[in-house]
Image (cartoon, rainbow, N blue to C red; front, side, top):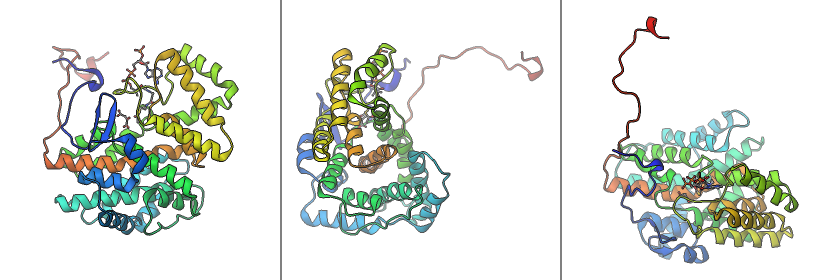
Length: 371
Ligand SMILES: CC(=O)SCCNC(=O)CCNC(=O)[C@H](O)C(C)(C)COP(=O)(O)OP(=O)(O)OC[C@H]1O[C@@H](n2cnc3c(N)ncnc32)[C@H](O)[C@@H]1OP(=O)(O)O
Ligand SMILES: O=C([O-])CC(=O)C(=O)O
């Protein structure tokens, strides 16, 4: 038995939700470029869960259901108020999502109907948690969700308490579309491993949030913004990046396990970054990002991934950098839950083997004789 480090190239599940074939990403066979241009996030969530785009009445039904479930149980809000000041926002999200199960009377109902409903509930409640926690930690009151609007609109509204500009809603919605699913990425795999024991959907999504938090995965978008803040201005880009490359440090937001010729989502976020810069009349973050790409791609051949340009986009939307990864989760919960439902339909425990490389033929040594 020989282990493949990081399971690179191992095909570990059959799935009909999204595919990456020859560098092309599709959701249910529809190219991400088409979805990014034409679809709303709610249409995409429906597509991932049901395998087809919704009719108008199905879409209206989903938006109504999301509205119905978006408010949080009072005890979950009370819990958010108790978290220590300065808690990591992904740790807070992970804890709050885990606690949702305690207040859902059907949390352990494993019928397909209950599981499908819980997918919608989680999709509805994650944005409310992220926005509520962001306000509570600043000493502000959470804002109740708005009825009848999409996830992007509602999230921006609950975060700021103000009616968001159409352009901000559109940019956020597109970002959500682009992040919704991605085949067997680490957090989705974590979700599938968890529920393959026939554990509940809340456990699966809690595992996934834990996996997304890391800087090699979803946490990279926040790390990109930390880097942009450290660089500070266009004039400093070259020396900063060169120093990192010379020290063989990783540049966050670059490289990908599957895409070796570029992540198809990055170009959309790059365009959004440029447009948001033009709208704000401040192109510095966009220009810094372009310069970083030139240097990193030029010297290392590494291309930006989905996390790279999303950092400048979210900043230009006025979002604090430690909410970037929670926003990724707000979108990806659609994909996680679709994969969880798919796993339940044709389940088998996921339990690979390890290649043992430890000592052999050892014996128990009494504690008094141990050196
Ligand atoms: C939503 C997402 O999860 S997208 C990914 C988000 N993560 C990041 O942006 C973090 C930065 N990128 C990385 O760490 C990696 O590219 C990963 C984790 C995304 C993919 O990693 P892997 O396929 O395991 O590649 P691995 O980390 O083994 O790197 C292979 C080589 O490329 C180098 N490399 C990979 N990414 C980078 C990078 N961002 N900057 C500099 N060098 C890099 C590695 O140092 C390694 O070089 P070596 O062979 O000389 O040691
Ligand atoms: O697929 C991956 O390994 C990471 C990624 O891009 C994602 O989850 O969107």
